[in-house]
Image (cartoon, rainbow, N blue to C red):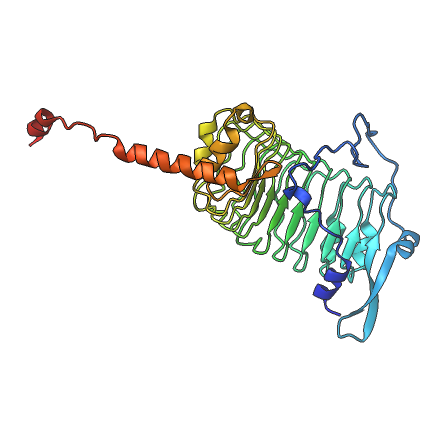
Length: 343
């Protein structure tokens, strides 16, 4: 059985339900960051032990030349661990779940060069930095105390989850090294800018619940299909360009877009099919749905509802009328005296 086959069999399902506009995004139910929960300054030292390893190991697979076998999956959740030094000796591990502990140091994982899948959610990590792991495909560091995105350079990494940390700016994500990365989850951080996410292979980008006021620096994301910006402070739709030619789903719910004319800035997105603008001031306008369809004729769904044929026909008539009015506008009179003075 190959590493890729193992991953397909054992990889937990990824939650891609962001495309449902009515999805609830509050995080009060998370086990490892409840509202008002206080952590002590220091935890009693609790190292990973051989007994814990015996309880947590599973999935016996062939290793090396196929003549030897080893357990390649480890789950040691909720053990109050402060130290995983013992993992240095378990070099055949491919799937590791060390979430909901008290870890501050992941350096022993640098020895697991066969690692495919890592879940380290709900610890006390301040960094996601690791040595380059050649086979790592999925890595989750949600709900830690991480402050930056430096030190992430795994060539086969496809999905990176940094939700619920304390990241202000995105730095160090090198597109020359992260050549397989297609999904980045950064919800619930403290991002003030979308700069630094220059990853042309990216398909899914989740930036909800941050402090963003505009979109910038995403022009080169030509493969991006899903962009989630719910619950920020965005008041302008500048920053979208025709180079974002694959974008199909855009969620801007709970922002501060007040002027319907801002919708015209989305007309150059050729594949945009679903747009969410609920809880923005502009949605209070009477002609809100109609104006959106006039500006974006290929739009199929706005907020929770698909467009009906009658709405499409009416929008087509409005576009045609506006076109005719523009064609009938007289050309500005030429200032002959000015032209002669310039000859």
